[in-house]
Image: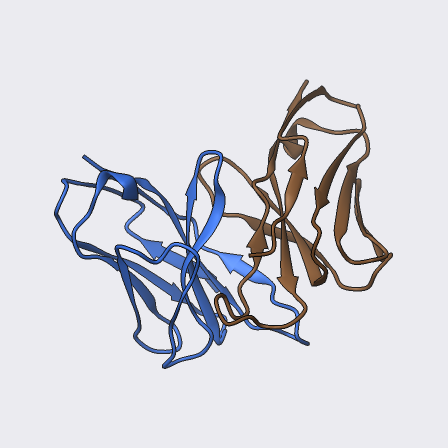
Length: 114
Length: 116
């Protein structure tokens, strides 16, 4: 039982390049989330998927797209990377047991855009 | 967005000391969670509090949810170096909102360093 896995762990991009961050969970959770974490800013929600087949914008969606490929997988794509997207990206999932949204996080992807 | 303010932002103490960190908001939350994050890793859930006035204990950690469900505190007794990390509180709104649905609102965290 691996929980939430993310690939890659580290990535360096040049401005304008594109990439996809992968996330998978094996806890049979309905909801999945993408956050970015920057110094002094805390965790900010980029996109979320409340259930398979649905996605919605969070607090900071500009410059990103997402795909909920199936119940297990939720990917985040940067179409044209910018230095402002240098950050640590976390994927999370939750099962909303008894109406409580307890989230489980992956280990993160550390992205640098030059 | 329902803002969560955490204090203090940084805390450096010696092993064996006690400490309390706070999480405050002007909004009511249906539940509130505390996470601990170690360098280079993702946040790990410590506890969820749901009922106003609720107190939960996890070994040397005591968590309390305010009566009005707007604030919470985390008290650590006899801190140890293994307690070092970033402590995050996160609140779920009383109902899903059109912007973030069921997502959590996170505070910016309290960075704790416990030295031997």
